[in-house]
Length: 571
Figure 1 (cartoon, rainbow, N blue to C red):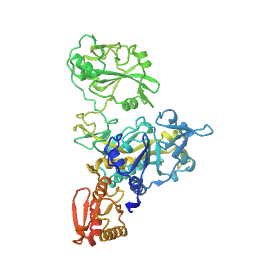
Figure 2 (cartoon, rainbow, N blue to C red):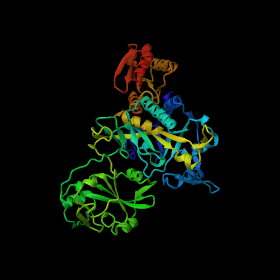
Figure 3 (tube, rainbow, N blue to C red):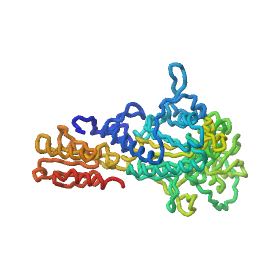
């Protein structure tokens, strides 16, 4: 490709609304352009990167036996109502109506559509297992789209769905996808971690996330410093370790705490550690109002509470519900006298004489003790894991936390959708049974953005060879010199003949502009053809990743550059 005939609207300044590195660099390198909040156009260079990610995904999905298809982006509401998700998915689901006032949604995921397809066409165990996948645009109406392709509303996703006759078969399909995902992210040159995860709105019995490790990630990866245990912060298990507490019960004391609402405020006001303050949070799980207590130095984990109570939805209760169950204002809720069930994190078991809200404005209660002063209906693991917590698998190591970017998620769905949508097959005995499902997603644009988060410097992007929009850029330094132009053209043609994905920057620009653009865009190799080095019969090969500059004979440039490319590729 001749860049004089290409479209690369690079920017010298970073747009003010760009926050993370990948967002800044993709905008500056002319790879994406914002159309609306969380919605982007993929410009030519960005699209080339996206297509390379897609091709890697296709390669390993096909090798794992999955079959590519393509489903509609706009889905009739009837299918979502049949599965039950139409009523529980939330505002992220973009609901629309056609001219006949029929309801549809813009699919954020396609479990319902694929289940409808399979239930109509597959009738016998002899036709199973099967795994169908697509690469398609999705839409989720994120409340706060940000970070460019990392958290957009419209995005490209690979989603696959497996159907098996039983749990053993589903386990095999799940493990095939797990292995394929590892190969995909390794082929993309990413440093990643596979972690236990919560299944969320997708549902199912268990799942794993694939996290690319990056300081700018908005997710947290919990891992053991002694064994291979890893989980995201929603799923990481906190071991219930008994703590001996020989304190003697003290009498409850009312304490006036004017305008002291937060744990930090109350702890400072009372001159107590935050671990002696207990937060009582009023939640709505489906239609039930409950209270959950956690220590002041711990954070409540909503997915754990939802799973413990087998709920479909969970949210913080509103003002009216809080006042109804506590007879007090928001910010001062406590367990004594609550008109709802009370659940408490395991750590509360071992506390004595702690501080809680008094269910009155500007009032807290000191020296409160469960069993004596109020009843906890059940204890459980309801908090986020923290560094230093004991590993639940080896019971020796301690948790450490790193930041990560979720690029893939695989789920073992079981019969959640096949039961609700009557997706059945006839077994060997002619009896109808529900198909056992799995689903498997990869964010295509997010994978590209995650690669930038791991591979960049102050000059711009440093693409792995496999994802680079072009592998090599040939730069004629002196565009007014016929010999320079001729040599650059010959090298460029030779690279194309060898199957190298190359371009030539034949724009009528100063060398500095071309070099800066090449560094910004992140081509793995740059071949500089200049008048001065050409007088010696040589050209320069610049390696973007290392900054190394190699002088080679002009006639050897194509072979040497190809050799360096192979060395840079992930084996």
